[in-house]
Amino acid sequence: MTDTRETENMRFLAGQVHALVGFCVTLINTHPSPADLSLHLDAVEQITLAHVESTLVIEEFLHGVRNVFDRLRTAVASAETRQASQSKASRPLSPQPARRKARRRARQRTP
Image (tube, rainbow, N blue to C red):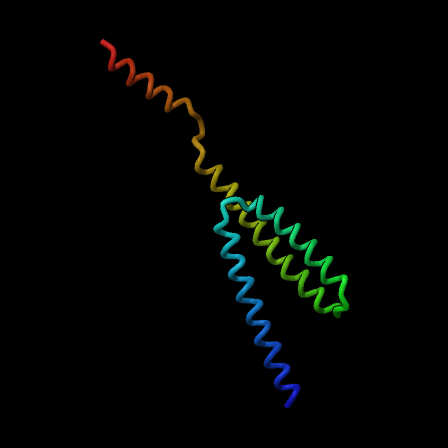
């Protein structure tokens, strides 16, 4: 009976972790500056690991902490790449056509 209950608890916790990682990925994907977020994530990981490693924990726990941070770091890297691609796509190729149009309009207005 105890093994069944422990298995149920582990599955419940795994579901919660999965949902929380999904929520974090949503936040990462909507963050205005994934590069800044990456720096903060690295700092939080270092602080978290320093705190956890200073206590008596089992190795599987540390693997779990590292796994979640790795997943979040991957999501941040994807968001950075996506943001860089979007900003490149939204930039005009050359400011020259806009300047030419403005000059033409200015010439048309002057008698």
